[in-house]
Amino acid sequence: MSSRNTSDFIKLFFKGCVMGVADALPGISGGTIALLVGIYEELISTIGSLNFKLFKEIGKKGFSSFWNKLNGNFLLAVISGQLISLITLIAIFNLISENYKALIWAFFMGLIFATIYIIFKLIKDCDILDFILIIVSVIMSLLITSVSPNNPHEISNFYIFSCGLIASSALILPGISGATMLILLGVYPNYLSDSLVNFDIVTLVAFTSGAIIGLLGFSRILKYLFKYFRNKIYSIILGLLAGSIKIGWEEWNKEFGVDILNINLFLSIVLLIFGFTLILFLDKKKK
Image (tube, rainbow, N blue to C red; front, side, top):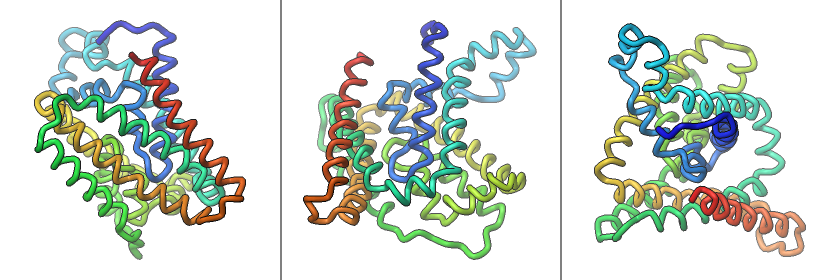
């Protein structure tokens, strides 16, 4: 990894904060934001490199060597920012989603449209298989977002563990929202936010354990796929993002319909354009 100074790690912290915001809100994933701000592949590679052999480095060459091989400063900056904003936003998620859902989605749709454009440029020499993968992943994304939310009457710790496992896979893959998956599973926002506010240790440990195991396992798969099938992975991500626009369009249409005189409709269009422009600006700065 290239050397970084204090300013770089502060930037990484705030990138993690933005990822946490995305993770807390249905429809856009932290993985999408990581891709937008230019840290996605490093994040996947770093998490995917975690194994028990790495921890032996502490006994052999000391903690400093272990921390450097772990890319620990990068992980600490990103994950701490992500957790702080995620925990903060979960507490106020109901208020935000209830009163400003359509406006939030207008901004996110701008982000998604721009991201689709950027990812399309990353696909080199698109072939017929890439095209098929895009179509299949669009359909898969549409199916995921069309499922009615599940509301299990009795939630066991094993079910919570499984939710963490599923959500962590969604969190790290651009185009699939972890928060949306948890809503479909019937545990977000009410059940998990109540557990957080009431500090229900058993529930929080069950969910976190599932999330960590899912994150470590899925990142290893993605690391391998990015190494050998880069174009194909970007094709799948492109399709997943394109399919996720459906949620935003439904929220927009539900809020505004054909009421062209609604001032919030004008504001939402401004937010969409701002989100689109912001991502193109970040992409230019990243280069």
